[in-house]
Amino acid sequence: MAAEARAAAPRIRHRAALDAIDPYVPGLAPVGPPDRALKLASNENPFGPSPLAVAAARAAVEGVDRYPEPGAGALRARLADRHGVSPGQILVGAGSDEIFHLLTRAYCEPGRRAVMARPPYGIHRIAAQSTGAEVVLVPLRNHVHDLAAMAAAAAPLATVFVANPHNPTGTTVRPEELRDFVERLPADCLVVIDEAYHEYVEPAHRATAIDLLALHPGLVVTRTFSKIYGLAGLRVGYAIASAEILEPVERIRPPFNVSSPALAAAAAALDDVDHVAATLRGTEISLAALVAACERLGLAHVPSQANFVLVEDRDGWPAALAADGITVRPGANLGMPGWARVSLARPDEMHRVIEIMERAVRQRHDLADRASSGR
Image (cartoon, rainbow, N blue to C red; front, side):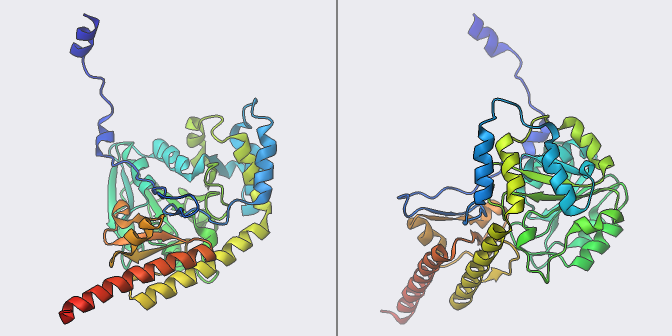
């Protein structure tokens, strides 16, 4: 009887806004022997975390019987000093992804727009859709955000997302165009500039929206410790904005949302300038090697200012990599069919990747040549 009653009971219905959400598809781990496996699907730092950060996290584990510092006060103070703002202008989250969800919960709702690129960074889209907001996707222009079109699409009380550099293309917007864009947006818009890959940008192209905070009352800049600092598994990110913008977000932030080891590691990572410099040097070598290989093989690629490259998917090279235990990110998962995103590996690992790509492309071309000659 109890089972029959349960079967006859009304179905518990989730919010209708969730029906429109395609779940985030993470980069797949490689399949094969551990000594051959290489994951180039999630833009992780192949040089690992800072030794200072690891030591700090290990020391903090001794105190995990206590809740972490509420509000991450010590880390906020460090970040505020680094960026020349007040601690009240910093919000720390479990990765910048949590911050996107908190911001949209605070500022998006049915009847409001959320404007972003097509394709967007997936979490921007999911966070906005989860609130029931109308998501407006503005196509990229030559693989770069079309800021003029995005400004035109922004309605009153809209939330606008710009990833700079963008994921999955690795492109940046010109500093003067970003400044004009921020100034043009209505004052009642929330403007989120996601700078997850900022530290990888070449100095000639590097500009931060933090310098534009005074130009728009709703400007929010986000950063992460997952990329250049190599702390992806600990989940630490932060936002910089006015205290007025962050105050309602703090009302819904879980009180102990970032663990003690993560907070300790992030603070220590800020001090390890040698680790950051070594990561940048290795990344530059691997980027140059992959770009040169694409040019030799005639594979189209998008010039990148991040730690990954979007490469034309043809001649079977992604499948050849997978057969050798190396995974890259299919472009179809990122809204870029016909492409594959390759996270940069260490230079020695990148050499192996390039050898496999070259072998696959040349074999495919040899087969095509033999077929065309009738042999």
